[in-house]
Image (cartoon, rainbow, N blue to C red):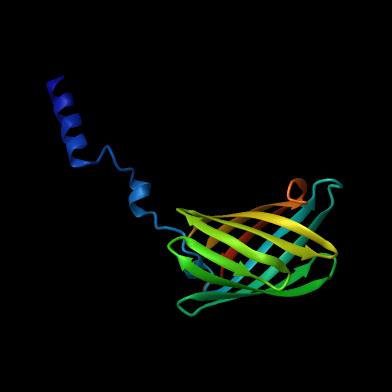
Length: 170
């Protein structure tokens, strides 16, 4: 009994019981580091009212200049439609960015928190302004899972986006 008490005391004092191994090695998710270079995303948009699903593949290329991340996106949809869009993210401070894209009607609010990035913005899709609320979760050093809820008038949910983004390795 004394030996067990001694060992528990020793481990607690040395910090081995207080700090999980995973937390020691985990690094924060940094927008400009992950999205610099070549990436590919695959996933879909689902209209939650009709159940219709539209698959997509996105080729991305990001460039960081020390303040601004420019992320060029080339979309190919399962119905053959193609689109090109370019995000421009400006670092405003620690864990805080603003973002703009051709179809975004007001600056996106972008915040990092540990292993996640939240992104909120309004985009003109067809003749509608739709609100996107994205959560990007880093799975590993080369993979990010992006989910988004899509709203009309800010509160009527109309769709969901599910994408897996992968950094291309050389």
